Amino acid sequence: METDTGFVRAMIGGRDFRDSQFNRAIQSRRQPGSAFKPVIYAAALDNGYTPATVILDAPIVFKDTERDFVWKPKNYENKFYGPTMLRNALAHSRNVVTIKILRDIGVDRVIEYARKLGIKSPINRDLSIALGSSGCSLLELVRVYSVFAHQGYLMEPIFVVRVVDRNGNILEENNPEGESVISKETAYIVTSLLEGVVKNGTARRVRALNRPAAGKTGTTNNLNDAWFVGYTPRYVTGLWVGFDNEKPLGKQETGSRAAIPIWLSFMKNILTDKAIRVFPVPNGVVFARIDAETGLLAIPESKKTIFECFKEGSVPVEYTKRPGAITEQGQFFKSDM
Image 1 (spheres, one colour):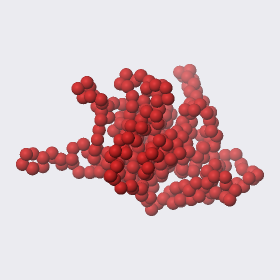
Image 2 (image 1 turned 180 degrees about the vertical axis):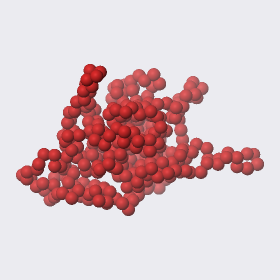
Image 3 (image 1 turned 90 degrees about the vertical axis):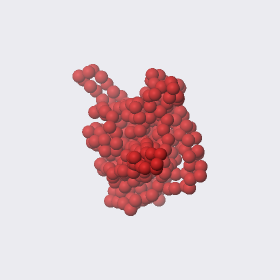
C-alpha cells in the first residue's frame, strides 16, 4: 500500500483462486504475535515513556485464583536481561518488558489506541494482548503501520481508483482520504524504533534492502504464524505465512526466517527504479546523546552512547552517575510495574 495515498498496489490472498476463494489478506483473523507490539509502544510514547525509558526485564508471575491458573510469561530466548531501554526492548521483542508496559499504561487505554489506529477486530481485555493474542487481518495491521509511515495519518485503503465506461465517462472515483490519529512526533519516534528493529534487532535481514526501512516481525506460539510488516517512506507491505488449519510451520520458522525473505524479495523488486528516500523528522522531535545502559544523558565515562530522539520537553535532565557513585534503587528504571 502507498503510504501517502492508501492505494493498494498489490494484494495476494491465497495460492490459487481456483482452489480457494477465501482472501486471507482481508478475511482471515490470525494472531499477529509480536507484530502487534508497536501499537503498545506507540501508546506508551503518548503516556510518559520515551525511547530511553528503562524497564526491568525480570521474571513476573500472575495468579488467577478463581480459575486456579498461574501465568509466567517469558522471552523467546527463555532469558531475562535486567534493566532494558524501551528501544532495545522493541528491537529484540522482549515479551516481559512489553507486558509490564501494558500493565502500567492500562489494557483499556491500549485497546482504545488500537481502535484509533484502525484495528476493528475484537481485542481481548487482558495482558496477553501484549504478545499479540487477539486475531486481526493483515489489512488491519498494514493500516496500523501505515499510520507510523505517514506521519500519524490513517488512510482509507483504495482498491479501485476509478470506474470508467466505454465512452470515458467516470462512473466512480475514489480519492485519497485520511485523518490524523496520532501526532507526527509519535509517528516518527515509532518509525525510529522500528528502524532499530531492522538495524539491530529481529529484522536484521531487511538491511539487505540497502535503503531506510522500518518494521516488526511476529511469531505465535508453536510457530503457527509468521509475520513481517515493514515499510519505506513510499510503501508499507505486510506479509503473513501460515496454514489454514493452524498447524506449525516447522522448527525455527519465525517471522524473521519465514516471512522476511519473501518481503525482502518483493520490496527489492518494486523499489528497483525508485529514488532512495529518508523518513522526514517533524519539528517537534529533538535529539540527545544518551548512555545506552542507563537511558540518561551521557558522560565521558559512558561505555556506549547513542543519539536518541525525543519529543520536545521529554529529554532526560539527569546525567548518568559516574562509576562508583551511589544510585538509589528505582531512581533510573521502572522496577515495580
